Image (cartoon, rainbow, N blue to C red):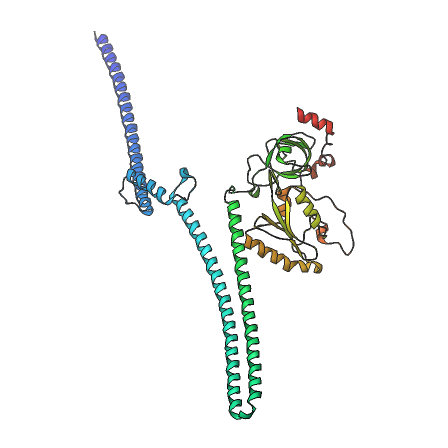
Length: 471
């Protein structure tokens, strides 16, 4: 009986221990879950406080911006939007793109227009002041002549009166003298009148010249007001390229294209030649159809080759339009120290341009710069004494181009945009050689690839090129 009681106690003890362990585990898990939930709740409360602080800061920034723009801090969005739309209609008419109008763009437009108006007013004031000074000088000179004439007349009358009182018996002589003096006065009056007329003619000539300049500037503005913001846009594009240095472009006989016209080549996504980096140049060799021509690659970069779809641009040739140029300074295309003026003129005319004026080798300007002249191309200043005579005529052409609003461009920029590549020349050694005869050759990857990598494959024959174009 005692053994059965001991067994019952043992079973009861085991069950009690098991229940105690289960209760402990459940209590621990409950405490752990509550602790995690409390931490998450604290973290969410912290995030909520941060977001609330950020929202308050953004609201304060928005109110500051409303005050800076001219609205009240507590104005609602609908009133602000309505007032902004009315401001854009009232003050933003000068901004062309209505969809992108903003207060900054409107202010920039108004400021630009104010600067232009101020510049025009300053120029007109300066011109008016110069004319007033000139007119005052003419009036002063005229008054001086009249005063001298009156003084001479008074002196003559006084002498005549004195002589008449002193020599009453010699009246005939006095009358004769008086007549001679009167004739002298008439002659002087005629001479002074002629001088005044000459001054008036010169003043009228200056006024007429100013009027012509104003008309020329107005004509130039009328011609260029409808042109795009950047006039140096692509003339065409590359339609196809093969591996033999031959390309085909989408220009032809219908575009007034001719052989030997050169183009610069730019990437397909670049459309402003003035702000783009040139990747190569080509020269037209054959006109194939109305809108297709074959050309050879005259310069390219193996690291950035000419591809189908690339844009082409010429500084001289424009589709259906002849551009006018003027040349000044020392024109040296290949850096040999010799004038290449005639070659430059031939290149412009060959590419469809017109040379309005140029400075010959003697320093005399041939032709005339007009409002239709688009570019004044100027060569670098020469250190040679023989070329010093070109400096003053070059400065005169710069002033005339500036007065007519003609754009100036350097000779290297002109050749780069045109795509012209000077031919290799022979260097003559001796005392006449200069440092420019030995320029540093740029380092290319071809320098490390061996001699074979520095040569391009032989060009296709005309028949092969024609068959490639047809394909």
